[in-house]
Image (cartoon, rainbow, N blue to C red):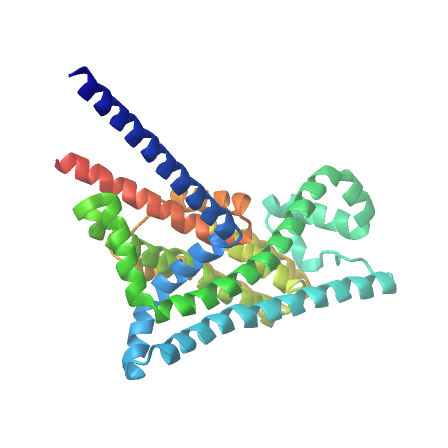
Length: 357
């Protein structure tokens, strides 16, 4: 009996050691795989999100191309690249022109910021501090810069980091779009793999979770990021057509504020106020009316694109976008909003499941 117990104990110990060794090797393999993919992990995730969002359009084009996957994927990829590349070229050109404008003004000895014109005298009293600051900045930019040096340094560093992050983010977007095009070609096997993974993680409820994540991604991309892009594009039209100085910079800042759910108003309103002092009344009024349409469009576009029952608290999107921006960079504005919204939706689904049980 003692010998049999000893053999059982020895066998159990060997099984434990064998299991530990296997788990250790598995951990090392997973860790190495993660380290290898880490430089591309955010591009990979965003590529998957783009592919999921574009899949309904891909299915439509698939029917038009007689079931040929490569042409359908190629059309979507080229469309997405054009949406990214064309505005990037326009924004870069605007920033270069803005720098050249500053240099020309400095060479001519003119004030960098033009003084407020006569129309500002009729502005409401509560705007008088704005006019006073504007006048002081125009008359003596150097003194104003010294006076508000600490505040300007903070804003300046943030702007430089935002522009640098935007350049990096555009390259990451480019890679993600190309990856999304490849994923669309292999969408069916990829969908089966994801469903099998969720079944392993959540059992019979895995397929429902997979479908919930898919619908959440499409809702957020259309209703939050899509609206932000549309509003920013509309605002950019106003900036460029009206000849607003540094239109590219204001477009980037408008996009950031639109994604974090603050809207383009904090940029568009001061721009309109400034343009009233440098444009004729009719042109400035038309710009203001157009920006008013841009601001109101948020209330029309979101219900149309977000979808019934897919509403997400603004705080969730705000924290996701800001947190993603601070953690990842420019790409995190989009990625953070989507991922945190998915987490919120899954958490709410879990609460419903627990209450039903």
